[in-house]
Amino acid sequence: MNTPQPAMTSRISPAEPEAGADRALRRDRAPVPVLMYHHVSPNNDMITTTPERFETQMAWLARAGYTTLDTEGFARFLAGGEVPERSVLLTFDDGYLDNWVYAHPILRRHGLRAVLFLITGCLHDGPPRPHAERGAALPDTPSHRDCEAAIDIGRADDVMLRWSEVQAMREAGTFEFHSHTHTHTRWDKLHGDDPARKTAALREDLIASRDTLARELGKASDQLCWPQGYFDADYLAVAGELGFRYLYTTDPKGRNLPGSAPSHIHRIAAKDEDDRWLRRRLWLARSRRLGPIYDYFRYGRRRR
Image (cartoon, rainbow, N blue to C red; front, side, top):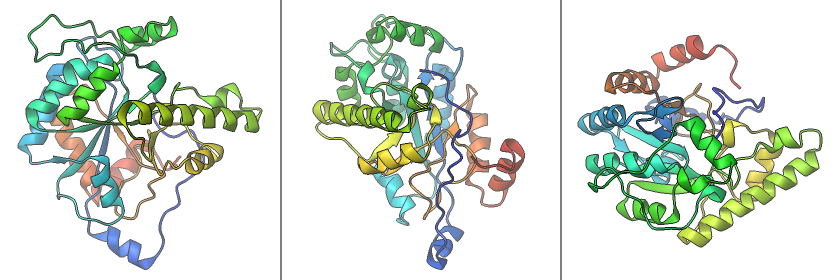
């Protein structure tokens, strides 16, 4: 889908806990970084990591002793519960075919897991296609721009996951699945001059996504990733009404700590670099002293 915004376009700031107990809870705990991927594919243009570099990143995570959390473990951490010292949350947006073809086998090989936010209206039925561990001819995994073009002309099944592949990854334990809305539409752009129409359209979109996940997977969840990272006060209100509590942004500036607001989860965009980039980036993200300094100079003063 459209390229995610580098930072939140909303001016709404998350409510930060102020109680002394919350401050004490946060003081001595390392943050849990959340990484944001889209594609793992040889057809590398934008928001894509090649399989070779994704392999080096995941191999390093495993060697370095990192635990890749599931959303239950991450929620427990935000609430002040215990997780392994070296923890990270891997997330993927949209639900592209290449996540099955390339990312799934690499995660399984290294015993890691990730979270995938699905645009539920783009998935179809059909048998699972080959992936990189099966020794068969692999399906084409187009570039991001070509994926967008295929979806626009009604050929989403050529570039997006099928429900059978979602089920196979879920059973293998490499991915868990949550909502990225049903249509990935920016309703604020379509109906920005009509707040009532905007919120009605968003509500319908989220309900359709929630109902589709419940039908296909047996349950929905309280986890939601905003399309292109955008949200505003109306978006937050609708999501809350529908029971979505954990809201994932594209905002890299800030740290996910015990007591942090689950309605504003910070994520770091993954790069098409080898494990040396990941090692440096996680070291900075987990540093209580250097992390905020890096954010200040990298992203500027304003937190949006």
